[in-house]
Image 1 (cartoon, rainbow, N blue to C red):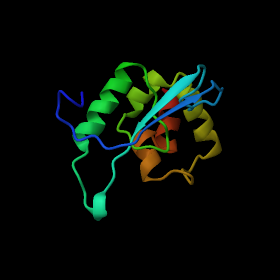
Image 2: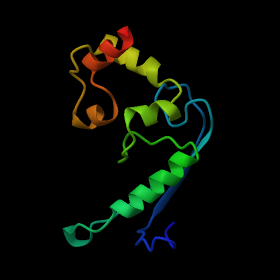
Image 3: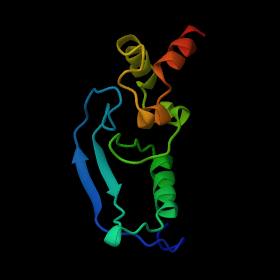
Image 4: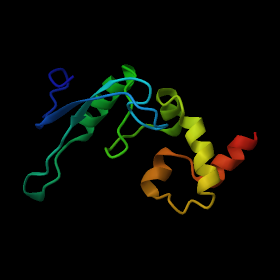
Length: 125
């Protein structure tokens, strides 16, 4: 992808191995994983082109069943996240019960997870 699309890839590319766990929205839920993370630097505070690199990387990872790390940037929608996180709906039900007003929600979580009020409506259907 880097060669084909002539993407200016920055280093380092982070690679870590993590044992499986049972956390509902963990990238390692149910199986050992290899985390691969890409990094884009902003030399001297300047913005640089990164969208093509991030989009291509995310498409490759998603096609292989990859799950994004919640502390990293990603663009998957709630419907896409449901496909890669087998306990997504369980998490959303617990979230709606424990945070019914969305006190712990923010713009970032709302972009990837339906707000609690919407989750309650969906669970009644």
